[in-house]
Figure 1 (cartoon, rainbow, N blue to C red):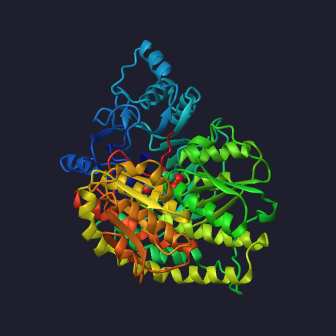
Figure 2 (figure 1 turned 30 degrees about the vertical axis):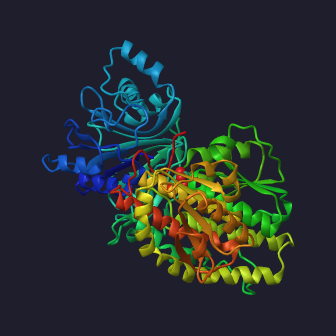
Figure 3 (figure 1 turned 90 degrees about the vertical axis):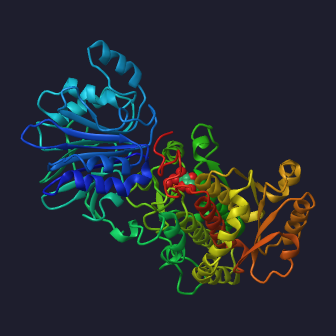
Length: 606
Ligand code: F6R
């Protein structure tokens, strides 16, 4: 949420920074800005604009920003509406100091009032601007010292970068919001997220909370808040630059949907035991020392967790449930040392999820992350990590990471089932065989795109839509409804199918289509009965059904067929037409699929 990029080195710094912002625009697109230090002590030059990055790029066509050091920002507004004045960077009144900030300064109001009493004039409504004035006030020739002094006065979350006309250095600091250093030869980068760095370097060092870094062409020196030197290991990221490019697709979301068969192979790769009856996961936790599992996450990751809980309960017979992270952390939950808390996250930076994990750790509970992004904050805070290996996910609406999370949970549930002696050879073998065959099933599921395109009209003109599922596919219904809402802005609600008659059935009418997950299951007959209840009330049913189902056509207005797979694995296949329905509906309505309104990826504020 909000993207920072900074560069110092031999290239045209503004170009590098704007290119980096383009790669981070999924983190926010309410405004953007860039500041360049022309060097030799000359005043900083800034251009910033409300709106998407393209507005800034247009403005930059008429201004030349030359210099070897630049900072840039793409904003998701918290304090202060999107406007030129509220866009970052924020400059000191003399134009010699620039600051960019991600996060929230919680005590900004008293600080602002005190600074105003001291004569500081504010040009924006943001909480961030207090940082410029605090640093300016503390500055006595040493920028890093001034940043440290300012930060001692603030409370809250931040990733910040600062530059001063008098120094060829960028000073950065982090508390909660992510920052990663890109290491080069005679040039260095800083960014909120790795994709900004990928075209230039894959050697990175992750800053930790409390770090203050000074970046020059020669390298990056990291210290703590008291100026003591710290070592931050340089790692090589295994994502390539192409993985974070659209690669000829109209949208990242479509690319990421279509990548799912190969993503699944990456998630599963090297994780099957040679006898085909168990799973190899490099985890230190002992499944037999666990009596209960609490899965915590937000949004799509929480729906993945819901499928995960069902898999773990069914295959390992361990009680498992999902707690929304933003609730768990404030709920005084009952957790003990035999409860495993599993945090699920694509980014590993979602503040609600991080805080829920911190709460669990404070209570001495073992923690595991089902996680995509290596080097993220979550990876550093848990006892164990199960990486899902989805590669960089750029589309704001999560797709391939969700699928990879489901696959990772299937592996984990098999491992737990085997370790706890609750899953026999035959069932384990059948499930793992089913998982191996899934990439092919996903290819077939992707072929439903043309059908989704035909049906998009029904959803695009709907007053609202109901998504219904049963058993392990209740979560699929929630995920389908969320995808539709967030990228097409068509209102949708999801329910466990059996709940419909307890209230939501009142909504049924032709302009409220029902998307029903009706693939083969142990409760198929109940599903059909529920569909009849809808149709008896003039409801329109779009059914996701198993290939070759001879009966479904009689109970649905429209059918989307997907390959027949084990019921426990069916959420992995069923989500594909749901993603495609949302995508095609959004396209039909002319929505900005990759940058839906009001949203940003990686929610690092509460
Ligand atoms: C929806 C979506 C969000 C995220 C949620 C958690 O498409 O992307 O609901 O799933 O914000 O994000 P992560 O997984 O990064 O913790």
